[in-house]
Length: 233
Image (cartoon, rainbow, N blue to C red; front, top):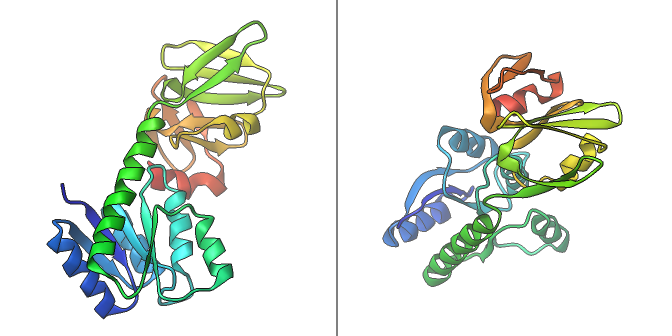
């Protein structure tokens, strides 16, 4: 099965070569971009299955900046770095973003095909392992094992936090929101306000000031969080 791949490379000839080689293998290059800004626009237009990303791009921002943008999206997109230069500092910055692969220029057909296939297989395996992440919540008497997808919202109330679930159960626990943030492994739980974490899959409606959850709860959204939340929704 072919993948929809976004190529972010500021050298047009290299980008075209990658496109031809990927199409020969049955993949679809949905767009080719030369800059961070073009890559953002292409990603927002249609989310790809994978990104092949040059570390150095045209303009002020680098491929590492775009990788960090991808890491902040609610749904993970695997990416592979592409580079012709070796700089230890840049290499270490790139490694911090946990890419699924690394390709050196000049591009070799077999290496490109193998790296794409291996990277996507690793991505699928990693996501299958965390398909239904769980957290444990202690209510003062017993521990509750809860699937993250069952959480509608979490509200901070002084030294306590109230966890509201899809079946209308509520669990009161002596745990600050910061501890929940550390424990959460999925990408659908988002802190939209200093007092609230919400599950964006359970938002029924929203505006610039607040979201309404499926249980009817209206939750405020901090000004600094608005654009990020709107992009996620």
